[in-house]
Length: 140
Image (cartoon, rainbow, N blue to C red; front, side, top):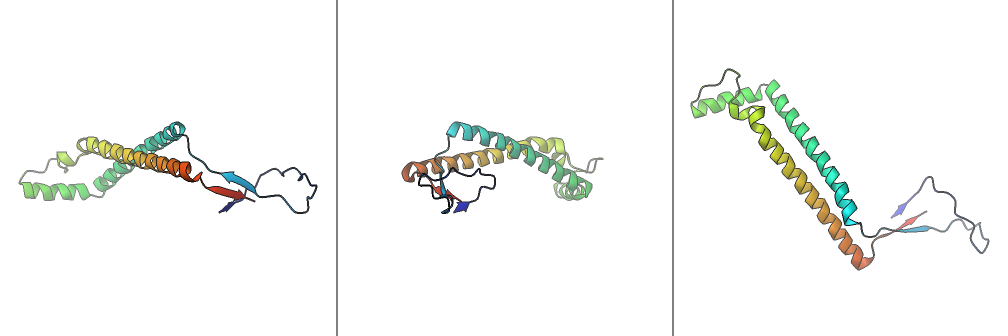
């Protein structure tokens, strides 16, 4: 695997004075990641994932309400349960206020699972780096 660095400053001339041979390739070693800083970084990302999921679920609920899907579902459930449909047209169990705790719990569980998965990946990476020394990348 090779990476190019577009804004790298030229290296000094080689000690033997041969500048026509070009620059020697730069070797970059990717080692173990510091767990504390990585965990803090991933925790912030888990917060971002949580907020995005909450916004996505709220937007989905609003879209389903405006499209009439929740009203149709409420009428069908009211028919099956033999209960009257409220004046709002949506059963209380399908209103946003009733679903909000479940929405927050689901988004938090998903963000936590995401965080734990990535922390596990970092721990496995650190373990592999301890055994192999980590991957080496040649930069031209």
